[in-house]
Amino acid sequence: MLMLFVFGVLLHEVSLSGQNEAPPNTHSIPGEPLYNYASIRLPEEHIPFFLHNNRHIATVCRKDSLCPYKKHLEKLKYCWGYEKSCKPEFRFGYPVCSYVDMGWTDTLESAEDIFWKQADFGYARERLEEMH
Image: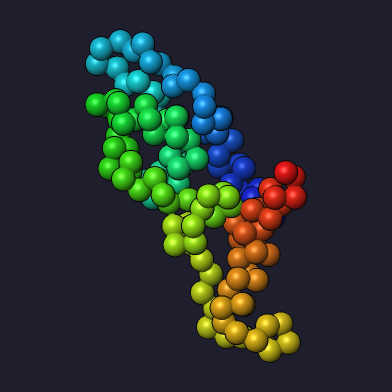
């Protein structure tokens, strides 16, 4: 829950609108970028995850010679983990457990899965599924 709050605070100014939205600034002045990339205030390593969920911005970036994120367009499979289309191998991260509490679970794999579903993006995914 705390992690969701932190991401909400960090991403409150980042455009997370629908993917079918028309690309902004499509009739840009020559020499000007087609999108205000400065509005994306994320660490560089989070950009592929952002572009995965904002395909309209990825599309603009692909067409824009001034887009600073072109190198990330090859990594659009990377996702946070809460998205329905997100495959486990492309998730932002996955917990690694080195010890199993036998009263809680019996294998490392199930401990990692339980942690992911209760305290990571798996938790957000399950809450989103409840809403649909």
